[in-house]
Amino acid sequence: MVSRAELFAEVRRLAAVRDEETADFDANCILQDLLGEKNPMFSPKEPVPDEKAAEILALARKRSKGFPLQYLLGQWEFWGCNFKVGEGVLIPRPDTETLVEQVLDICRREGLTAPKIADLCSGSGCIAVALKKELPQADVYAVELSEKALGYLRQNTQLNGCGDIHIIEGDVLGRDTARSLTGLDILVSNPPYLTAQDMSELQTEVQHEPATALFGGEDGLDFYRAMTELWKSSIKSGGFIAYEFGMGQHDAVKAILEENGFTDVELRRDGGGIIRTAAAVNQNYAAITF
Ligand code: GLN
Image (cartoon, rainbow, N blue to C red; front, side, top):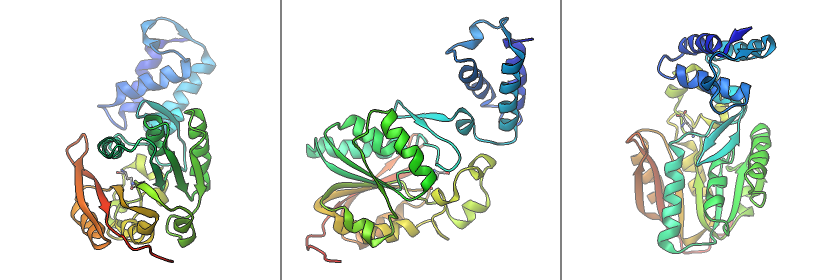
């Protein structure tokens, strides 16, 4: 039997094949998860049963080939909550917490304690769950199309005690879906926004994530154009829209919002200093009929 210390060294070595900087972190996460202990390396001499060691090494080998750590662990943290993840659903990114913060700031400022919110392209449900956790009286709708993502979305709402989030299986680019939700105080979305160029240069890890959650058309803006146009009449006049987008897309997204009758566009930077989100006020007063 190998000791934990020996096993750690080997797992670390394999993880470092992908990224030297995160190798310690990866190895720690894998051992924590598989040994079921918070601090497995507090007992470095402890022997690891052969079968367990083989299981751990199999994961480490997958990691060394560029399989995302988050999928290996089967869960990832976002906004202090745990989300089940696996192939077929986008891994929650810390950047997206900026979008949650922006929506919460709007609610605080406007005194919205029980807003009606729709999260479009909900994926794992990280945005919907984080908002519901902070605003327990909110009426939250999560819209998702992918069958695989819906499986995770259902699990994640339940596991986080947010079973009253309304899950809508539908295409956010479909007129019927947009028509089924009206009177929204806030529409929030982190849609696919990578460009054709981005898709051709994806990191190995990201290549394992669903292209449908990443690719936003040639210039990455297809969803902003189509969703803003289609959903603006589902938002109350005076209500808000909040989007996440990619680096350098802020001017284009701002223009799309303004062309569609939204004003007071507020841009925000993520933790890495990149302008990452925009929120704006809906000024479309006329009741628009479909
Ligand atoms: N933030 C993701 C990435 O950089 C993209 C997610 C998205 O398209 N919404 O890979």
